[in-house]
Image (cartoon, rainbow, N blue to C red; front, top):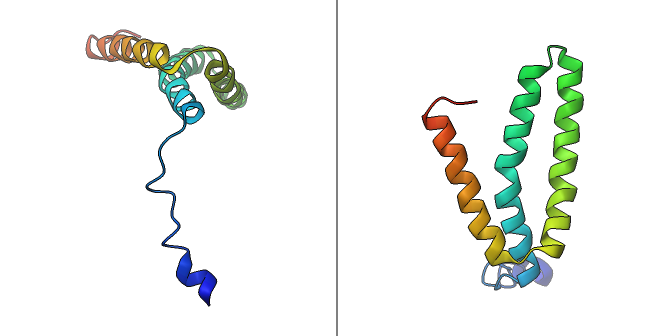
Length: 99
């Protein structure tokens, strides 16, 4: 019973984010619009639904492993700055109706 009563006290909510985690999060922040853009272009180019699923799985795999490699080699501040530029470009394209 003591194990269940002590678990809320030892939560990780107050734990400070480590630099490795911050680099991973910033890598996801940069690569998410890139993968959405590539996936959207491939979805419009492919008419076969099966190939759309295959390309979606490849994009998800690239997103996962690409973010891991990105976090290993690119600092968080550069990722964050580049992420703002990429997201701004995506929002600009969406606002103006470009694909």
